[in-house]
Image 1 (cartoon, rainbow, N blue to C red):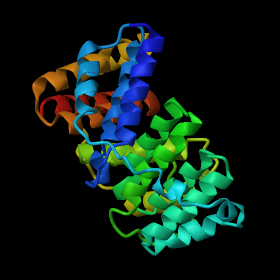
Image 2: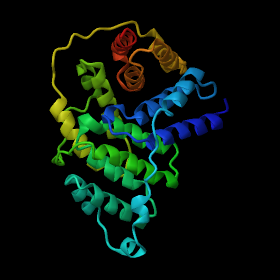
Image 3: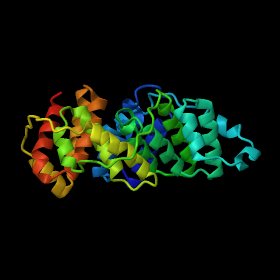
Image 4: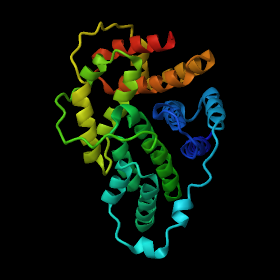
Length: 304
């Protein structure tokens, strides 16, 4: 498959999941698995896995599409667009759980800014007031938009985040603080649950990003990191990391092969694929001395 054709297919899958009706747990929003597999398949762009593409095609067709995204845009008059509107008005309405006013403020800001994608980051910052609930979704949603950052997609992705923002009441913003421990290796070694890896990988990638609203992201991520970090004695197990070494040296299709295996297993497919993508990130990010630990966690994942 030509790379341009692959990119077009992946862009369509990401847009379909951003446009879907979803009222469930944000950790399982379909945009997460779609973006995770987009990342994995990036290892073999010239010869992508047919099994992964077939899985994405089937998965992204399982959800109904939103049809009323433009209602609030259409209801804003030209006079209202010209009125002064502040991001703080949007934040207050959202914090108070006022869906209609949040949508109205969002529409006015969107129209006044000519559809600036920075507004996505404003909503993301608010969603990150609940790190445990929303950070995995926010990371993958922002990266999904960045894959094809067309202006006409901004409102669709804003509505995608809006669904999650109003799933449950947001906690108040946290005070600014400094991360006490900045060594990702220590957090990684402290993960006793495979699911914790997904939260950590999403949080750390946002911390290391270059988003305009990064200071706001850092405020919430720093608070979370200081709360969750604990030096527990965990029984660290290891396995031979030769496959990971080969992957790092030659960019083999190792993680694509593992993804194919998980899809064929027909057992906890989505959970395991999301975690596999996190482990792919850690393979590239953590100290090479800890690759045996990554190898063991991959073994656990495949053995589920």
